[in-house]
Image (cartoon, rainbow, N blue to C red; front, side, top):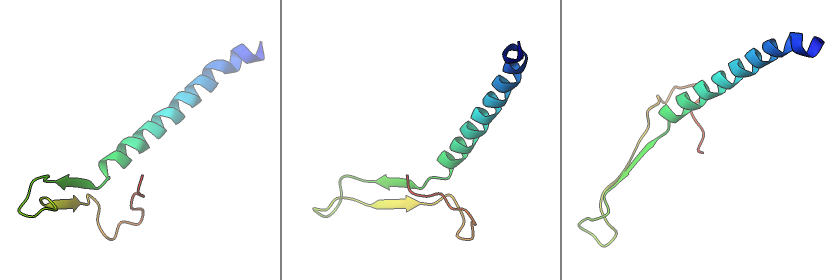
Length: 66
């Protein structure tokens, strides 16, 4: 009987933890660097390449490379 009494609370807790993990992952995705590249260019090496960072240099917890 104890299992059935505590199951809804355990499920609610697990759902809350999953929601937090999903939210953290979505935030991490927003903070990833953006790479752009032009395949064709003026030289045999190709075109322009750029990287843009969406975070500040003084960010205490910058994202790590994935």
